[in-house]
Amino acid sequence: AVIALTGHREQLGAIAELTPEGQRQLDALGRRATIDALRVHLLEHFERVSLPRRWRFPAGLPYNERGKLPLDALQSLFDEAAAP
Image 1 (cartoon, helix red, strand yellow):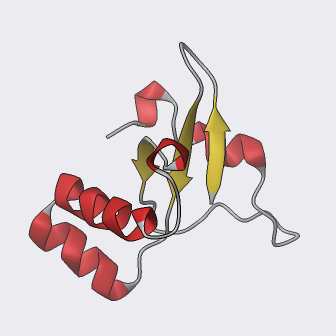
Image 2 (cartoon, one colour):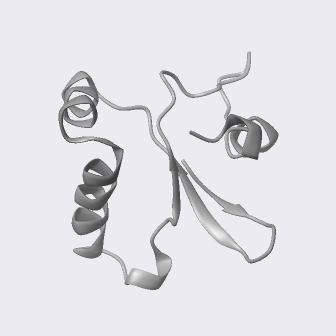
Image 3 (cartoon, helix red, strand yellow):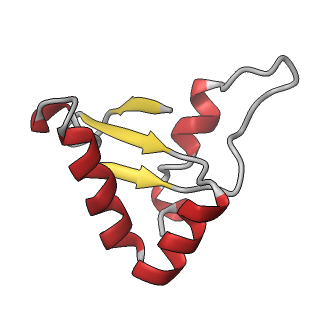
């Protein structure tokens, strides 16, 4: 999921539930290298200005009982207290 984050300036935030292979890459290469690899891939399809600036990799996406991703639950992943 990608959401618009408001604050000092607007940014895009990406929330990605990694596959087991993606989690292994995150563990082996680290957060920065994993994000860089994702950005390189996305640059093949999108302009740099439209890429997410902030990233979160929760163990699972916060679906509600209706199977939807509530915006407030996604935004809460970017609260400063929850930031890695």
